[in-house]
Image 1 (cartoon, helix red, strand yellow):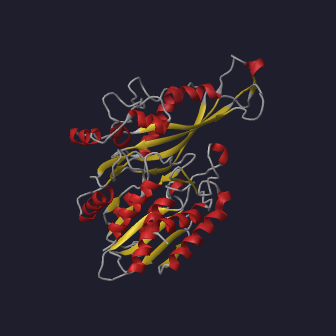
Image 2: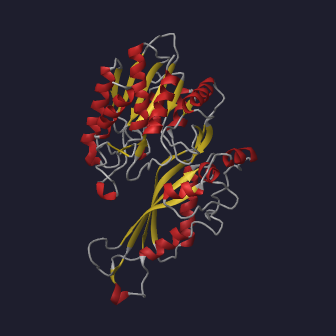
Image 3: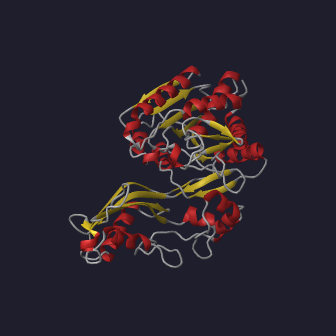
Length: 440
């Protein structure tokens, strides 16, 4: 069987598991996914350990090809975002579907499809006796919930995870060229709840005479940025490093099409700070995004009640030297300063993690660059990423080994959205890179 056909079959099986980590009702699917991974690795000669006690189980699979060789630790995650057909999917999200030369399904690129690229190549190298490294896989099940216990696990299991470097593929390719990722934003999630009365009130009897929780919360959310798209929270930028001219020039050199950005995002405009290019804005500058607002009656028809409470979920994306806990406290202080005295509020924050920058001056990154040039036929871009990957810091801190971060997904992969997909052209390039990089 050709490798790409083997890949498709395994990905079909992998995607079929509804391994959603954000909802406990999917725990049986989590367990089935772990059992499947254990079986697949075992069938290909790996020694497999299932580690519990750190939230969802972790799968640690090891293959020693030659004790004289170096060892690569390949990280991935098997958990996925929720998905329902009525959210805009063209097909069942947990049935891998090939359409328009794309493999469509939840997890197709985040992260089942990407870690599977390396799995099938390692399996093939084992069969053909051409593996260039000893290999360990660490595949976790809580990345989509912030991997809250992963740092503790890595620190407590450094001997089990011992390797010479880490290989991670968990992102999208930008600029139409292969990428090597060199930095990630940190961040935290938070919940802001405001209360304006002890109960919802009749909008006819009390309308325009009492405060409305949604109105009060909306004022906070609507005024987070000024006219230049700078965050207004006092002290927010105190620890933000200035972006060097060299980095700005490098980011500006990454091919960027506003029309392509509009096509992929569906947004009609690009809202960056004045004079800041897209890749600098999302990779090296912080952000606050309101991701959810809930309040009032959400059922069918109308209740016509003035809501007593309203809640917003707010996501912070932070850059190097910004301390997530310090930022959360600054935001809470700011909210307290602008809300009227008649509004009570609570502010909770969870899963804070620091930004990370990757040391690229090592032989593993240099090898990745050379292999990418061969596999893709073009020189790779070094890219700062707006998303977060907190385990990068954990690996560096506990294992003291470098990381090689090579995203494999197409830029319009719809990560975390309906019709998540892995373009077959990108699959073919990814398989070629992995085969060359992991081989002798």
